[in-house]
Picture: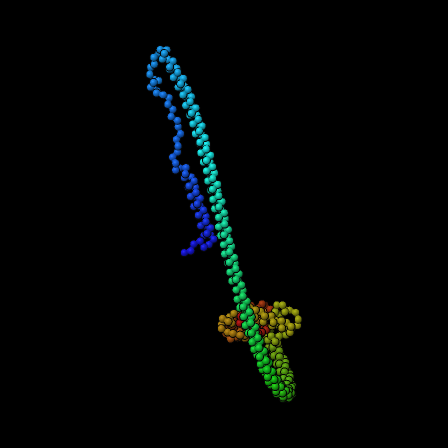
Amino acid sequence: MKYLQTKHEQNSAKITTLIVVIVLLLCFVVGQEYQELPEEYGVAINFGDASLLNENTPSNASEKAPEADEVLEEETLEEEVTEEVLKEETIEEEEINEEAEAEAEKQKLEEEAQQEAERIAAEEAAKAAEAEKAAEAEKLLAQQEAEALRIKNEKLAKEAKEAKEAKAKAAKEAADKKAAEAKAKAEKLAKEAEAKKIAEAKAAKAKADAEAKAAKAKADAEAKAKAAKAKADAEAKAAKAEADRRAAKAAADAKAAAAAKAAASKSGGNETVSFKLIENSPIYPGCESGNNATRKKCMNDKINQFIAKNFNRILISDLGLEGKQEIYIRFTINESGNIVGIRAKGPHSKLEDEAKRVTKLLPRMKPGMQQGRPVSVSFNLPLSVNAK
């Protein structure tokens, strides 16, 4: 493996070497103090034999004088010893002060060396941080350059792809346009041929239609002439038949009136007169105004409306019948104006019963008058009812 290849590894090696040197220097400087044995300072003072002082001395005068001299000598000796002790203590204090100053100087040097080492370490750390920062910046710059190159390559690839697609699209559009033009030309030719064919067919058809129309007009004219002649003959025949019918009806009515009048004269006024032949018809409530014909029409309409309104048309569906049902009703309005003698004829017995039920609900009317006397009047009613 290879070491110290990067700036960071080189800076780390430098810092480690510097720290080892500083530690060795501190060990060398500080360790000298503890290699030698410390000196002991002291003074041995001999104050004489203590046993001599404790012995009893003679009390004669000849012996006291030497003792005084000895005491004086001893005091002088004590003073000298005290001066030497003080001198030695002064020397000791000076040496202690010198050692303290040396120790302080030594500590100051150590602190300066430590500060210098810390400064150098800080500078190395700062340089290492700057180097690392520069390396990070170089790495980031390289990444940015790589990203820019990738984006540029992608952009170029995209532009190339778009150009290729645009070219293919243009080629396809040109081909489609050419195909559309060819198709339009073919369709135009086909349409022209079809239009020509249709025009020829229309012309032939128009010619045939004109010929057929002319023939039809001629035939229609002939048919209309024949129809007009036939219609005129039929109208003349119908007019003659209607005139004959009216004459016959008038004769029959006159005959029936005469017969009714004769029968009334003979029977004393209990005859039943037809609604069509009555001189003064029965009067339905609300139909009092107008002449006899107007009152007849009003009565006929009111009775039809009443029965149609009250007839149970659901019954027709219940019986399984469909469409319009015809029921013929016949009843009599007696001399008192009441409805009597109700009869009905229809497609089912239940419909006949329903018609009778509704007819009984008709209100009381003013009776019909014949020659100034009330008579019974027969009334026929054809009823048409649709299922509900």
